[in-house]
Length: 219
Image (cartoon, rainbow, N blue to C red; front, side, top):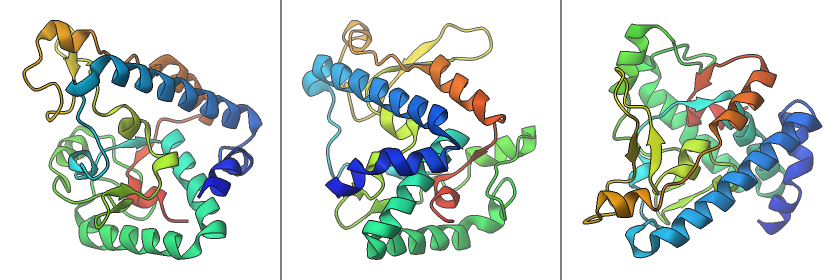
C-alpha cells in the first residue's frame, strides 16, 4: 500500500481536474492531518479513537464534490495496484446501493443528494444503522483511509458546530470520547477545521452538490 500512497499525487491531479485543485486538496489534507495530530496530543486519554472502533463508520452522511473526487482518485489507484481489494470495495458499494437505493433522497442514478427541504428531512433518517461500504467489518479498517472524506478525518476531537436558530456555536465530539471531561477540558482540545480553505476549493469545482460514499466508490 505504501507504493499506492506515494503515487497518489499524480493520479489525484487527473481526478481533481488539474494540478491547481489537486495541490490545493493535498495542502488541505496536510493541514487537517497536522491539526488532528495536535488535537489528539492535547486530548491524550480523553480521545479513545482506535483501529476497530467503528461507531463513526455506520450511518449515511453527505460528502462534498471534493471528497467524492478524492475517493475516486484513491479507487483508481487501488484498481491498478490492488485490483482484488478494489473489486471487494465496489462489491460492497453496489450492495449498499441495492439495499438503500430505493429510499435514497436524491437521484439514485447519479448519486447526487436532493436539496429540497423534504429530501433533507428524509436524509436525516436514511440508512442510519448501515456500515459504510469502505469499512472492512472483519478488521475494523477503512479500506480507503488515505482518501477518506473530511467528515471522517475530523471525527473524534471537539470541533465547532453551528447550533442554528441564532444560538451560539457548540463543540461537538464523538460520544465515546471525553467521557467525564469538563467543558474547559473539552474546549482545550478543539480541532480547528479550515472550512474557508475547503470552501475555496469547492468554489473552483463550480458547484455544491453532495453525494454519499457508496456512489463515490464506483466508476
